[in-house]
Amino acid sequence: MARESDGEAPALMRLHVVAFGCQMSVADGGEMAGPLLARGFIPVKDSKDADAIVLNTCTVRQHAEDKALSMIGRLRAWKEADPDRVLIVSGCAAERLGGWIRERFPYVDLVVGAKSIEDYPRIVETALAAKFEMLRETREAFAAGGGAPAAPIGWSSPVVAPVTVMRGCNYSCSYCIVPRVRGREAYRPYEAVMAEVRAKAAAGAREILLLGQTVNSWRVVAGDGRQRRFADLLRATAAVDGVARVRFESPHPRFLDDELIAAFAETPAACDHIHMPVQSGSDRVLSRMRRNYTAASFLERIERLRAARPSIEVGTDIIVGFPSETDEDFERTLELVGRLKPATAYTFKYSPREGTEAAERTEDVPAQVKEERLARLNELCDGLTEDAMKARLGRTVEVLDETGGYGRARDAFRVKWETPAEPGRLRKVRITGTMKRTLLGECE
Image 1 (tube, rainbow, N blue to C red):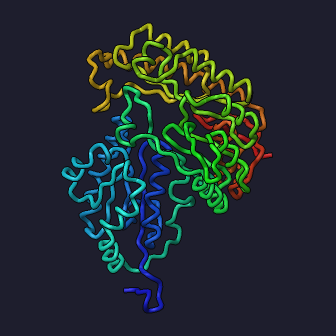
Image 2: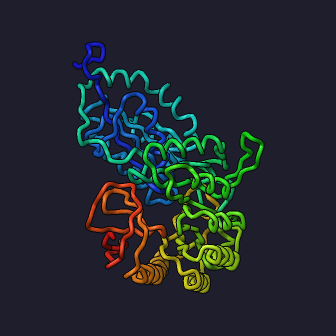
Image 3: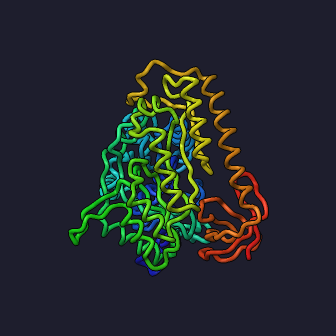
């Protein structure tokens, strides 16, 4: 057995992280890998090669929760093949179903809910320190070779890095379980956020993705006594050496205010894209959803943003089949989509979440009606996306090369070209074709 004290390479343990759900879940997975990486684990791409797996779960929709639980079940064979292996289940579904997960899957070593992420390093060390040492003793030295992923855990590419600025949500949307599993809003200090931005830029990040459940609600009093709001954070991040682009997810319409709109207009590094969930075009449904805006006020804010930054593209989320949604309500949604003209849209059938207000309502929409409405909505949204992509044919767009021959334009459309090179450069690509949701081009 190779031992560090013998002057040989220490035994290296291998870590695989799986994240379900939103980009914030992916970033949380990277954060949860930190204590294990500090203990000498190295990341690997394939779960079958791993000595430890962190599975970060999502519970926003039933489908995402079911996928995570199914994977935990499949990992039983992985665990039984080598009981020394470590399985950690974390995140939003772990918060909601922690006790049930422990009982249903007794081979899971540790269950950590989303509300405990700030205390996660201590929790994992207290619970598993002895097991980590035993695991180290049983492993031969392992050469990573090509096993490590190209990007750090939690990054979407070697040059696009997430930075979480806040967690939780103070709103009570009647369909949403996030406040229950994530808690109320908590904002990271300005100095801590900026230190992470600078560190990730120094590590090679060219694009910073600012993350939070209601990311644009972020506001703090900094160490110098000044009040800072999200617009200030956007500007400061864009000014860091090495940062070429800044994006953010997921904003709330309430905080798309004049200050943030001005920051878009005045900050070239802010990308020409915003993903702003609308959920419905019916004021009656929006009220029952407790979304705190009307269809008209939502559109008015987007119109002001487009006036300030004409090149911006808008994406959105829409739910069909919310309890009591009528044909007329759904028609209002189609009308709003026609006026908004989102370049991209994520569309969903309403999924009741236990413990939410909407789940207690009895005026459910029949499954077949939900399917029909979703099909009509998707036809409209897919047509708008296709129109937006075709409009780019013949244009030359700026693309951040993320993986060598593949990246995103400033408006978030994915672009692929045939002359791969080192990632991290901003390239001019002339768009020559389309393929599904990807633009095809030639690098100039």
